[in-house]
Length: 290
Image (cartoon, rainbow, N blue to C red; front, side, top):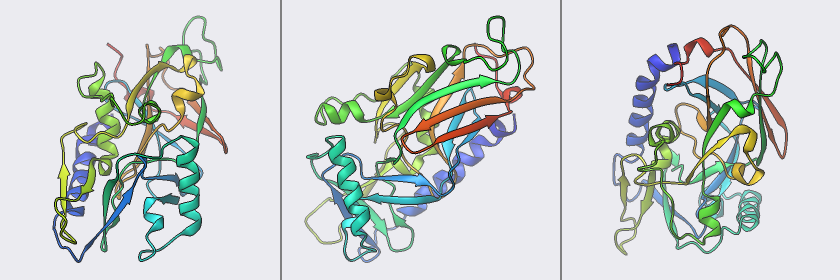
């Protein structure tokens, strides 16, 4: 229960960090960056690892560390601020791959003190498959090492279909039956809730809005049994990384827990670049599903 117990404090620290990012409207301290793509950038973790952590409501979060190994996006085209020609080329290639070109211009803001806002960033790798197994018997019919995908529901967020619809009719998680679950993802990627936009033609004029959860939304909900996931479901999953705390890519929830929870649950996440093996030993921290 340790992770669940300290989750509110953890979220509070993130919120404080995020609020400080845009605490002042100093025209000299902020720079606008713009993109005609819905996705502002892509990132990957500094270490080639993923982590698993217990959350409330019987959920297991799968995510990455907050220090980017590489991050490329619209901001890489700003020649006055750490211009990265290769990063910008990668960004354009990725956007073209998803036909993510032609969105009405979205403005983001970066601070000379805190760096760029974390806009609509997504995991640079493409998740292809998720697998789940347990080091002990899970239940009758599910012996040690059996694939448990049909017993776990995956929750994730992706803008892929929104992009394919040419940025029309965005399906928000607000009002979704699993809204509380998706709130865990967005709250832990809370910098994604900050997007800068121009309020006048005056140079340096800035307004930054901080909406409640999902008011400034960056994707659409995915709810699917792990055994039924397609590659399409998993493309552009995730989003966001904050200055404090880790980024959640997806959440898993079992239909029921085993009698013996002392074993190791192994989650494998295969991407187009590597396969992550994620051990989880916190089944005792999970609440029994309702």
